[in-house]
Picture 1 (cartoon, rainbow, N blue to C red):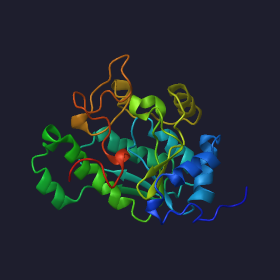
Picture 2 (cartoon, helix red, strand yellow):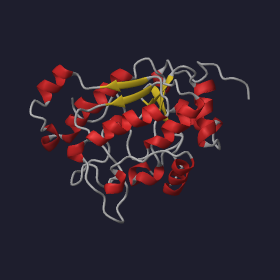
Picture 3 (cartoon, rainbow, N blue to C red):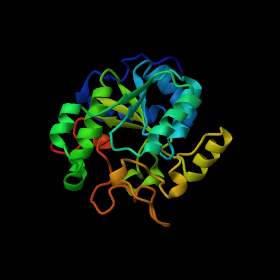
Length: 250
């Protein structure tokens, strides 16, 4: 297959709706995760794609996959200012191990944060608003200038993710999910094969790791994300509900 033209799928036209993702899924179905990453970097979104990583429980796999092809790909990390110290240390250790050259740590706007959450307690009264001001809005700023972004989402993680495909429409951008079909055994095997260190909190019962106030340990038999926003009717922080419309009302 010849090289794709950068404008082949009309990414400058948001009104195209879900058409771009459907075309991409049809044209590139059957690719391995490694092939999907390579084609996204070299042909589909050359120079216009970033990797967004939480440096969470399974993040090392996607980070290594991308870095093994191009360690200069921009890696966007949102520091919500409420993360576990272990996550920040893990970010630094992995970035050094994988020799990532373009780490971009993004933080919430200080003035907006002071106005919306002066006592660091917004998560208790309006978790959606807290996620928006600390995570969704900063990431939206960081993604300006990109047409697409790699995510590490997988179908097994939760019922709400059971149907995700390799390519998804996200407003005017495309999300690329190279690991969508991977399971726990594949992730463990990949990490062992490439000697990738686990997030230190995984061994303590945290298979999915977000902000400290809204992350709890997961019990045997629960899905991997059961410890996120426990007790609330909330399953996503907002960034995977669309960067331009996360339902927070802010």
